[in-house]
Length: 355
Ligand code: KG4
Ligand code: ZN
Image (cartoon, rainbow, N blue to C red):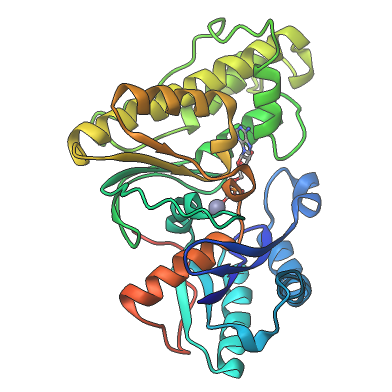
C-alpha cells in the first residue's frame, strides 16, 4: 500500500510517500525556521501563509522523488490534530482535494502519536518484527511533551503531559535568554557539550507537581535561568526591572548555565518517566521516544541508561524522522486506516486534543 502523508501542523510543510510497513519512498520537508527566526517563535499567520505557498510544490516533489504518479497512491493521510488551526487547515484541505480527486481513502492522524510511529520509518527493506507492545512512549518536541501508554501501533493513552511550556519550547526560550540563535535546542546542546562545561554549577529547580505526579512543568525552570542571568527583579515600588542586562553574563557562565539547564530539564523528564513506568506501564517491553528534542545528546544517553536499567528495548527514530516530517503521518495513517477505517470528506482540523 502506497500512502501519501501531509504535515502542516506547525512550521514545517511536509509531504512523504511511504509503503504501509514503514518503508519511506520519499520525504520532503520545507522548514519555515528562517521566516520565524526574527520573532523568536512561530507566528501563526506567517506559518499559515507559508503553508499555502508551499504545500503544492512539496507534494509534487515527494511524488517525483518516489518515482510514482498520483494514480499509484492508495490513500492520503494528513495530520489533522493538534496544532495551529490555520496551519492544520492547509494540510487538511489539500489532503481532501487529493483524496477526492484520486478516489482514494482519506485518513486523519494525530501528529503527536505519529512521532511515536516514526521509529518504524526506514529507507531499506529490513523489517523489524520485534513485538514492542505494550510500550512506554515519550514525545518531546517544540510543541509537545507527553508520556503515553502505547498498547499497539494505533492505541495511545496519554498518561502525563506538560502544564505549561513544552520541553523544546523551554530549550528555545532559554536559548533566547542566552542569546543563541533560534531554534535554540541544538545550540544549548552544543554549548552544554563543550569539554569544560559544568552542569552542576548552577542549582536549578526540578518541578515535582505532587498533585499531578506524571505531568511536567518547565516554566519555573526557564524563569530560574532568567533570574540567574539578570538577577531577581526589583519590587515595583523600587521602580521594577532587573538589576542586570542579558548581555552582562560571561561566556563561561552562559556555557555552564546551558549545561545546568539541560541536565535539570532531562532530570525532570527521567523522573516522570520512571514514575509512569511503575504506575502505568509496569509490563512495558520497550521505551519508544520521538520528537525534535530526542536529538538532544544528554537526553539520548539518559534514555539509553533508563532502558538498560529497566530491561526495556529502546526505540528511537532516525535523526531525520525525530523532527516534524510527513513520513510518520503516512505510516501511522496506514495503520489507522487498517484498524479504524477511513475518515469522510467532512474531516476537520482539531487544534488541541485531550489525547
Ligand atoms: O519535533 P519538532 O521538529 O517540532 C515540533 O513538533 O514542535 O521539534 C523541534 C524542537 C525545537 O524546540 C528544537 O529546539 C528542539 O526540538 N531540538 C532540540 C535539539 N534539537 C532540536 N532540543 C534540545 N537539544 C537538541 N539537540
Ligand atoms: Zn512535532
